[in-house]
Length: 97
Image (cartoon, rainbow, N blue to C red):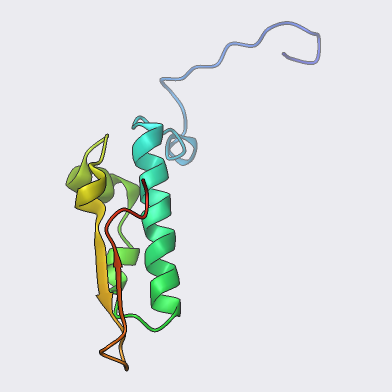
């Protein structure tokens, strides 16, 4: 509504590039899996596990290209070794289910 109380029309087609970057055409499910996986990878790296930055820096679009709009939980499996203690392993076969 504008200052006069009238309904305002929004031109969705001509949204600025800055605002257009906030529009998400994908599924909520894939976005949640993306965020959960990214958080898990960051936590493992913080605890000394060998997690490549390329895995953490994956964008939502890259995640969706790799895993799809409705990711299969089994494909999201994470397995990592500790950088200094090779006997310390982390494996999360179903951390999202």
